[in-house]
Image 1 (cartoon, rainbow, N blue to C red):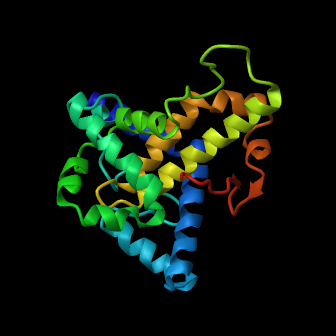
Image 2: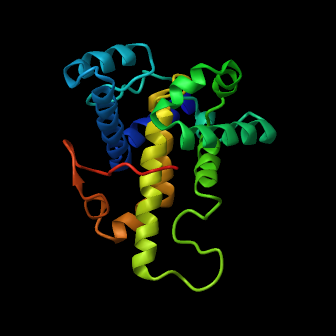
Length: 226
């Protein structure tokens, strides 16, 4: 009981973080754009989002209920799947994220094997490996792989690119039916907090790093994963 209470408290704290709220806003805005492109229309967005949330797979427009998708303590710390299974899944997701973009969910729904692999296998460690694979194995943050440090302007540009990737990957993962949106947002938020938030605060906060004004704060523009 104490473990569950601690886990719930940790989730509630995460959902109140700037990183979570920025990701939530970004994903909501991206979904509106997808609806426009698909012809659904903005006026139908609220009803659609509410309907999907009631099924445990969507976002509320203002916030996400901590009870909507249960997340066990282990979901945030360990992965029960074998390294081989996880690597195979990472490789498949990398290909889909790069090639399919907004159509990633449709492609996954056409592949029953991949659906089964994803079901219950989406952990934080898998999210970390996925981000590393998408960035070509480059270290996250300002750590260099050898040689002289990058000039401040180049380092700042790399940081902003890495941060934009986290937003974009989190958004695309959140569209997959087998991945609860709340879980994708929490993992993206945690990844930002662990790898980028200190640097962001040292450089004027999120307002300076993500200069596009949104409804509830500052958010970032999309990036190209291809």
